[in-house]
Amino acid sequence: MENIMAGVELFQKGGFIMYVLLLCSLFVVATGIERWQYFHRMDAGRAFAEAFAEMAGHADWDGALRLAKEAEGALPALLTEAAGRGHGVHAYLEIQSGLVLSRLRARLYYLSVIVTMAPLLGLLGTISGMISAFSVFNVQTSQASAITGGVGEALVATAFGLCVAILALVVHAYFTQRVDRILTDMEECCSLVESHTDDFAGENA
Image (cartoon, rainbow, N blue to C red):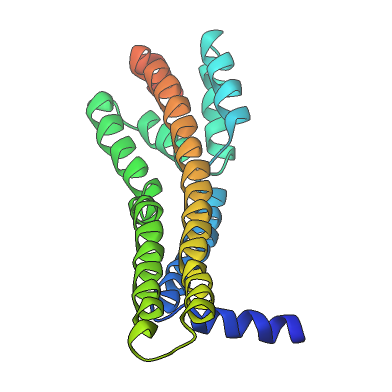
């Protein structure tokens, strides 16, 4: 309990910027949870893409279509819909895959903004605290101890800002990597479908 109270007291001494950084950290956590749940629903996984590509490579379009219908996620749904189209498959896949990727990348931009902004906010809080600390020259006689304590408290904002930035960077990098992998799987499967449109669509006839 004493450690918690000490942490709260130290947080409050960091100034107003600490509350802004706290909101940023809560946003990062909330975004990470929301994106994880969304990716869990929409990502069919690397295993699906590999199995689909293998079946398509052996011209087993009936098995590939069955696999797409049974699997869950954005890519299987996209491939299943493409099989039901006799023409315009290329345009359909291009437009729909772009929409899927746009939804997957939603809110990731804000994480990259926080990666840059959080350290700057922490630095702003530190500078503001140091200005206040050095102002004791005009109001106190024990300048040395007061300045040392003030600077130490001011550095809390920078440390917290860096922690928020690191957290946002980790979350952003994780989901960016997953988007890149999904994009690779999507390009591989869609290219196979586009190159054998008649065969794949014929299995759904």
